[in-house]
Length: 297
Image (cartoon, rainbow, N blue to C red; front, side, top):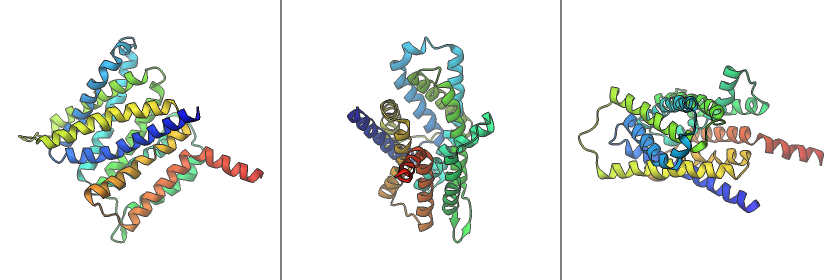
């Protein structure tokens, strides 16, 4: 059993690795491909890749449930369209990744607003640290200025939190593979429709860009979600939550290695504070247990 859990944890680490490097794949693809068109094609193609694996199960799912999955896909499409727009205008992928990771802290806040579920003490302890981290990220030239890309990342993170809440409820009624496929498809539909209204395709797109696009679809989307779901089934939710924090860390590493991204001291402090807030929030149960045992000793 211990070996199985360790294997699952390693799979989740691999999933965060693929998610982190996926930021680089995306940034490289949209050098030539329109951003919204990229998101649309990425998720529509991913849906068709997954379809043969879940078609027989999908047929048995009630249409009403599939409709709810489609709505969540449209919500995800809006969130990811904001995200890719922020990626297209930012020069700091690492900071953007840490801002996006705040979506998990927005979840209890949004749940409180919608369902009147009061956040637990872990949330209230983590929130001031995250806010301080966001403040440090926004310091520019000695003053506080929320950059355009940072604001868009923040909006995307907030929208992702609403999508996460809806997903948590609908996933009880729809098999995971079916829900993922439906969401991917309607995410793609939303972004492609948006692209049709506001974007113009270039006359030619290089083979290199299509290879970056393929890397975004296969390892960074299809393989990542398959590995992540498999890993989550064979480990504890607390372990999975803590491991998934690694995604923005990988993104920072890859952006420094690939783009030579310079990170100012205040940005490093800001990212570190956000990371601490997420570890505190997601690992609150384990932290409380350790301090409880220490107190009893």
